[in-house]
Length: 84
Figure 1 (tube, one colour):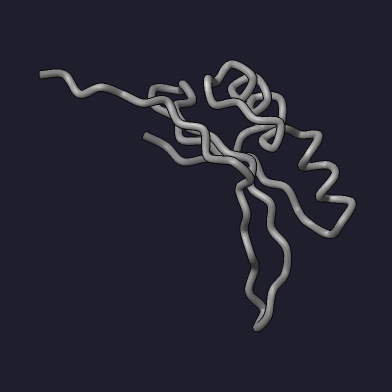
Figure 2 (cartoon, rainbow, N blue to C red):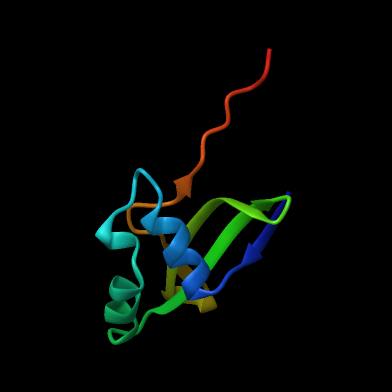
């Protein structure tokens, strides 16, 4: 498995096909937040080059040179049922 950044298009394609899709996990919300001082990040967990989990994360500066990260209504996961 690999944890990696993905493109906005990769994220949007995955999110729109996910059963727990929410308007709050869209580039439109990310761009709205960017206008208010947040930075957007799209990250995913891939297995064999296929996205199995992804989220849009927003970050902004906080006290003591730290950052606050926020994933509205996320992350979006594909549940795997263990084989017996």
